[in-house]
Length: 446
View 1 (cartoon, rainbow, N blue to C red):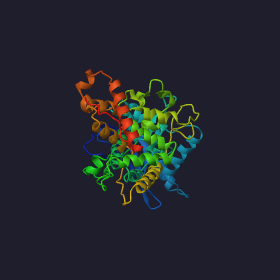
View 2 (view 1 turned 90 degrees about the vertical axis):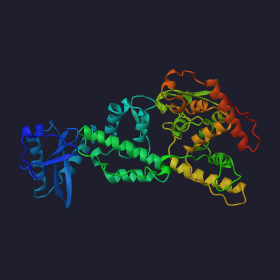
View 3 (view 1 turned 180 degrees about the vertical axis):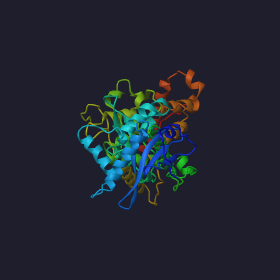
View 4 (view 1 turned 30 degrees about the horizontal axis):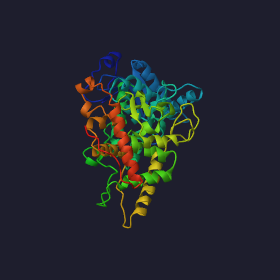
């Protein structure tokens, strides 16, 4: 039921536990939007071309009741003229013209995402992971700006207003992830939900496009919630322990630079895909046999020193050096790190299966695997070699587990020697495995 709004009633309108849309009886189609947190804004609902549409006017009190009624009147005059025009389309075109003239609309999705990361996410745990889920990472050269991750939300919708990103856009984006990253799709959904809710709280949006949307996969699905896949066994071939790792290594050799050696370093170091993929030459000290990942590139925000085994050094020393300001190790242009992991994974799957079929007479089926499973493979391999759990966690740069809570505060030992011995032993094991030679690893125990 419509209410004839007044300046006093708008000011004193009380929020409830549900979002309210209060219709103004004086101006048809004008609504006062009242969020559960008390934030208020104005919108106009109208029909054009047989469709029910909504035009966002702006926040209250930036727009007073009088100004909101004037803007609503302009919108309906456009609809009722000799040549009716869609006011929302005209609003978009005005913003596009401003962009072409060099002015950036603050409501562009990527600019709102930057503001969210700066004002909200940076003050919370897992800041870099939140940025990654939105498809952004700190610029490696300037350190102040943001790079867009190819295929991420910020890159996909970088030239669109946040108001123009709808439920269908979000659902299609997440659905494309589900076949290869069920849990990742759920995590991205959760972060997008926080992001859009924050935008509503700042009166950038009147309502979240993900409100009421279900996660892309069932959160109770154990396969989506937790994985235990490693590449040190084949479920369909009982006597094939470690064959998958050998086949993968051969597939990497056929794949070649950049993704072949990149994947081999994932196997030898146990670090994350983004950490290896974005590696730069100035992070590597060949004389000290160390690779130091700076804090802005690690998940916990702390610098992480990775000892380089003989096997890892052998791969790095053979890599080509492509000129570029950032000095990326794995790049095709010199300007940006490699991208296109999904296409690479399809090629690697095919090459892995070919390597498996060449080595066995009977048919071989390779279970689904992901690049992140290589990190679990390294962890399992180190445990198998007798490496203590604290050392394994230090190699992987985990801050939970053995180093959670008060232990992490007072435990200052860097485990540099233990990490070096562990990765050297793991490197010898992998080298012996892929060359079909008996490994000369001596298990290291705590």
